[in-house]
Amino acid sequence: MINFNNFRIKYQHSHFLRLFFDALTKFGIRITPYYTFREMIASTTLPDLSDKIENCKISFWGPEEIKAMAKIPGRKLTEEDLLKRLREGHQCLGIKKDSQVIAFNWFNFKELTFKWHRIPLNKKEVFLFDAYTLPGYRGKGFAPFLRECSYRELKKIGMTKAFSYTDYFNTPAVKFKLKLNAEKEKLSLYIVFFNKWPFHFIMKDYQK
Image 1: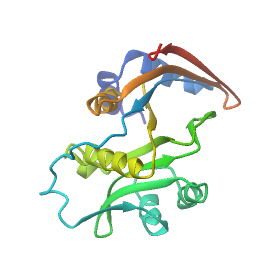
Image 2: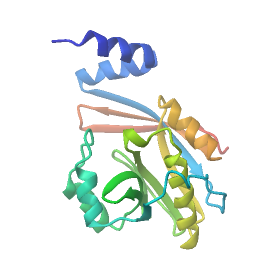
Image 3: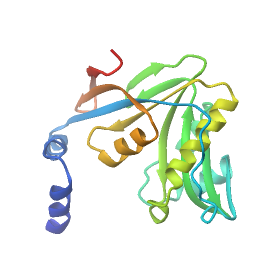
Image 4: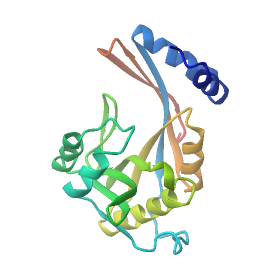
């Protein structure tokens, strides 16, 4: 049965192009415009979350935390998917309180990846991806706090450039990146036909 209330909410809060692109997926055509951001790795003043991070631990995560991440409702990645990331050299910095996962983000030191599109990174470059805050902790400053912590950790190991991507239609995420003084690098378009033939196009290069 069609849930007309969910459809109404989606229609009210989504760009008409997003709705159109979503409709095309039913015919095997996926179209996704997205921004690539260049983020600043610099010493900054961390937001004051002293009243919220009491008894919280910020650290790089391993297999124990991976098990908890794999159980988060609504996320499609399995425990094996996440462990594979660790085996491939990716790292995950996160915040947790006791055994409760609060927020995390991942680092890829080898390449910037978007679906089938891969761009090799130089020695001192890093790709930040899969940033996630559990719903009950959103809007409380944990995401920018963790991002600033990430910059500090990356600076310690000599990283000088950080990249990330954000869906064109994800306005809150775009605003979040801009508040962190991140710069739009490129606006790209990803198209795939029938899960077989992917294409990428650069629509605008903001660095030129």
